[in-house]
Amino acid sequence: MTSTTSPPAATATGGRDLDALFAPRGVLVVGASNDPDKLGGAMAARLDSYPAPVARVNNRGGAGMHSTVAEAAAEVCRAGGTPDLAVLCVPAAACAEVITDCAVQGVRAVLICAGGFAETGPFGAAIQEQVMQAARDCNVRVLGPNTSGFFVPHRGLWASFVPGVEALQPGRVAVVAASGGLNHALAFALERQDVGLSLGVGIGAGIDVTAVDVLLHLAQDEATTAVALHLENVTDGQALLAAVRELSRRKPVVALVVGQHDVGEFAQSHTGALATSWRTTRAVLRQAGAVLVDRADDLVVAATALSRVRLPAGSSGGVGLVTAQAGPGLLIADALPAGGVSLPALSSSTSERLTTLLPPMTYQANPVDTGRPGPHHAEVVRAVSEDPGIELVAVYGLLEPVADFTVAAAAATCAVILGVDGPDAPVRQARRSAADAGLPVT
Image (cartoon, rainbow, N blue to C red; front, side, top):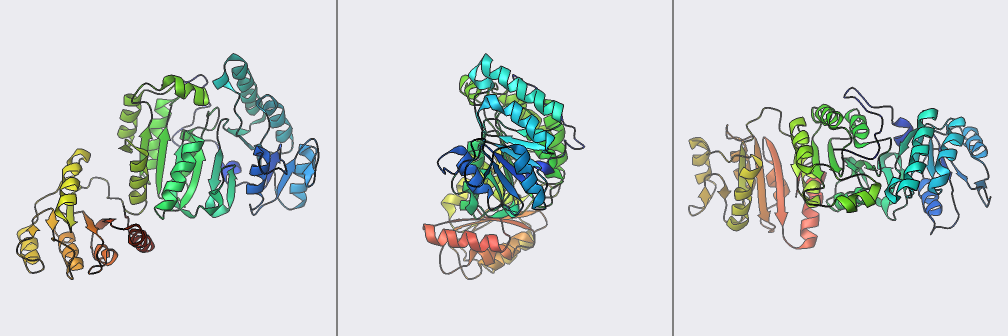
């Protein structure tokens, strides 16, 4: 687990303050433009809606532009703000000098989206070292470079040049991704699941602010109830272990690690860092209490579910599966043991109760196969949930008008997760209904 650079280490008791980055009292856009097709134009347009003073800097001037950082900072202060964050839309070679200029005006955090650093070779590595030195000398936090930014929906903060981010809804899942592109892809996938975001961060090269720093920040963030973590490289395995352990005590962490196969050269071209040891990183994350997944789709599904339900530590994890179709139920039952999930036998009293609710030809053990959804579906779910060996009920079915699966799942007296299939429109409606009821749904 090595990298071409080593950012400052964080500890499990807390990284350096990131409020200036994620909750700035004022923002400077350096290298801003009135052309929406340019990086500085797209970023400035997104940040204009932030409900704190935002000022634009372009040394060539232009409508609404200041020619110096000092002038822009003064505008922010006159508007009652503090220039905490500077978003740099300038070439790599200019970043170190701009950081110094910004720090003089009180800036405490910087976002660098540009490439042209260590990933390009020795010349870029030298520029990167200059940026890191300027940040250290000025005590300024740096997110990036090589990232498409971040967003904090409940604050209306869209420090991203990717179209469509303004439509992302606030919610309880945070995304911490090595890649700015994957940060956005995961955010849009969560949106399609009717899941809002508390924070979405693309770490990029991670020359200063790392995933460890953001994880420690999220441990204190009351808006977040689950974290989706994507890693490409790890610079400090012990710091990662400590951060994930600290965070997972308070809220679930779902992790996806890149590098099972040989992607070293591609990874290095991305941010200048070598791909991490896949097996070692997964072992560290598992030891720290993270839930591991193998695909981005699974990361979205698991984070969605865990943002709404989590079994207490030390639970036996006994699951009762109630399915309205045997074939899909068999696939689910076959997959559960690989995740360490048990399907315990139901008690005799539960079995007797089910015989009064289900037709005789149905399978009334665990899984419980109702044959198809019926008028007593909610009562079946409740009966299984009240069994002493069951801590979570998984309810699955193809949507039919004879049963309301959200109502059925809500009848559970223990933790529950709902899975539905069918035509797109009814499935979207069912997922929306379940989300409104606070139920995890896939």
